[in-house]
Amino acid sequence: MKMTKSIIAFMLVVLLLVGCAAPATQTPAAQEPVGDSTASNAPAEEKTDASTAEEAYTSLDDFVLFDAEGVLTKTGRDAKGTTGVVSSGKYEASKIGKEIMEKGGNAVDAAVAVGFALGLAEPNSSGLGGGGFMTLRTEDGQTFFIDFRERAPMAATPDMWQSYTDADGKSHVIGDQNKEGGKSVGIPGNVAGLLYALDNYGTMSRAEILTPIIELAKKGVTVTPTLSNDMKNNYDKLLLYSESGDIFLKEIDGIKYPYEIGENFKNPEYAKALELIMDQGTDVFYKGEMAEAIVASVNKYGGLFTMEDMANYQVEVVEPVKGTYRGYEIVSSPTPSSGGTIVLEILNILENFDLPSMADNSAEELHLFSEAFKLAYADRGQYMGDPKFVEVPLKGLMSKKYAKKLADKIDLKVSTENVLPDDPWMFEHEDTTHYSVADNKGNIVAVTQTVNYIFGSKVAVPGYGFVMNDEMADFVTQPDHPNSIAGGKTPLSSMTPTIVLKDGKPFAVLGTPGGTTIISTVAQIISNLVDHDMGMQEAIDAPRIKGYNKNTITLETRISADVIAELEAMGHVVKPSEEWNRSFGSVNAVKYLEDGTLDGGADPRRDGKALGY
Ligand code: GLU
Image (cartoon, rainbow, N blue to C red):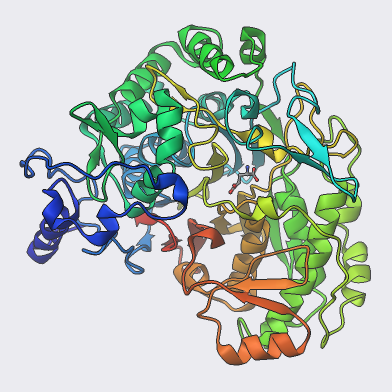
């Protein structure tokens, strides 16, 4: 990219206005902690010295992510390439991935670098203390699924959290024990998973991959509006779990503050952690000094970790789930994710209707999406768990005949009201991250990785610059459910890193965060590409609805009032949100155009940026 003078001038203005400048020049967005009352105790910003040239360093180069008000820009997220494209949740991570490919690395090398870079630039969403899934296609056409999700520590039991049972016999955790503190933490898989991918499918050394990230951790990344808001909204928790505050808050005269938009966030401890991993590989994390620090940190806050749990962590490599949608092959996440299975169930239901002849986001199309979501999400809640521990009717859930039976239940004019309730907490996710890498040889990598909720369990590992996940919250509390807790079991996920092929050739790679709405978002994006022939950015930008197991359509308000009125007339309860809403996911994806161009798109609902060459 060429940096124009006007863009440089604009970035300097932005940095002076919202960055390290004196408080008098800060925008209201930068002064006010946003969101819930947990931020209410944040101290008022104190006067600091004006920016020096060193402080004005921005790792965003000429990419304008936010305006002077701290509002995310909605354009400029896409990029085309003829050789390779990387699309991730952070500019800095996409840039590191692209540079790895330019140096001769393949898509896996780039993806592994992006994965570790996000632990620095987007520590609120994923990192060394988390886990994830990789769906991979190699240039010879083979597909693999690498499961590096967290596992329950062996001492975990269904009654380890205090809970109560309601009148319907449903069990509820008291307080936030499943979402923060030591008992919310699963054994992390990110380091094992990314290094497994590098060793088995990459071409570069750990040093080649990690050195640029170590340098960036010392130099610092730009605090985006998304990250700054998460730091402010979690300010009290970051103080409470003080090891987290030491990493993710800045200190001025002995007082901790959240970082402001545009400021520079350095993480030298993360650089140290990566140096150890670079020199010693997975052993230092699972058996060595980092394992000891992880066990001590988690157990300090009531956790149940042992060194054996860490040493026994295993990456699983399994067959992805495979199915078709109108002749396109879908390659996606198998259990322990519900994602690929339920996306296929939804697409199989939709295949019974002529969506290509309907206008995108018309009432008739949204009605069908909503009905398909209700049917498939009901099955998800009823049947899905870790198949190593419970029987799951996977073939049935993905069968075209079963989908036809479900499709026959759909009334084209009337919304189904009578659906079983599900867990509304599962829809509240604004965390997690997805990245996609594709090259012109047909190497494709889709990774969704997470620490679960924002800043995970809030328990950080001092000295190493990262926070531990709270993935145990993805289990259900009652003991008799397919997704109940057991030692060594993997909690059910919705993460859906997906590759789409046409006639055996690459067509698209995609995925998103968003809790259980990952599934409905992935289904809508595939429909936008296949049914409505959209470009990648267009498919990402298009307004979305959320998938629920209830008679409600939550939608982005760029969907017209006429369509909303038609949906209401069919009996849908419509809940408008905002024009662009962060909780509707963050799709970072690449489409292969017919002339061979790689068409990268990234989601303006968060900080995503595609880069190609
Ligand atoms: N814990 C979630 C899952 O695995 C992470 C996904 C998300 O929150 O976006 O489904």
